[in-house]
Length: 211
Image 1 (cartoon, rainbow, N blue to C red):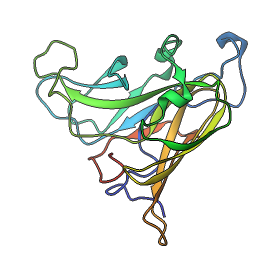
Image 2 (cartoon, helix red, strand yellow):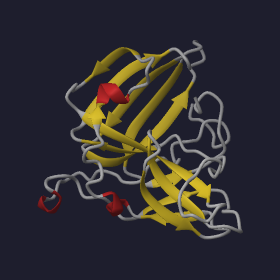
Image 3 (cartoon, one colour):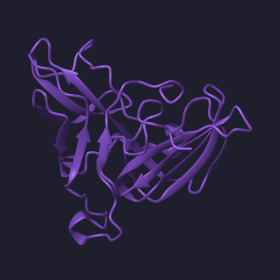
Image 4 (cartoon, rainbow, N blue to C red):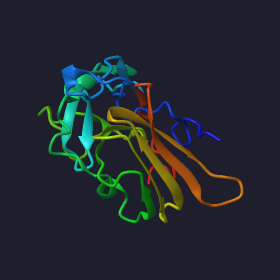
């Protein structure tokens, strides 16, 4: 079954903006065009010092940042701002997997990817930069992904106990998160799959899927 918004952050979660189009364009060097109607949904932004949304790498490097209006619950984001920022940042897909991944099966071991995640934060010291302690307690399990070719990978992790699958289209995309636990086993099933809906939803941390 699909997880509820309060439990496992349903597939409409924000986690990453862009989605790969079905056709390529010479204007982007053969890469799919990035759609521009993307948004992040979130709890009402706090008042006071400025609030921002940032799109971060796993190393917490910010590749995109936009301001959030006080009390706003939806913020438009611009996928085109990412442009070629994947250059020099992609890694072989095997290197992007969790360290404890086992039984790895990948469709193309030469594929390279970049995974990004959304963070909402309040600039308490007004320096315009995300510093320690400024993150708001929100997350999304969806991701913004760049893949230099279409690729699929399956693997298992032991902590948490999950069978996982990733399926990414060529170019930038929103990778939708989905997780469930079959009634007959303690092993969860989890996936990240390219989805055309460019809507991300920041929510309170949830058990298991927050690991």
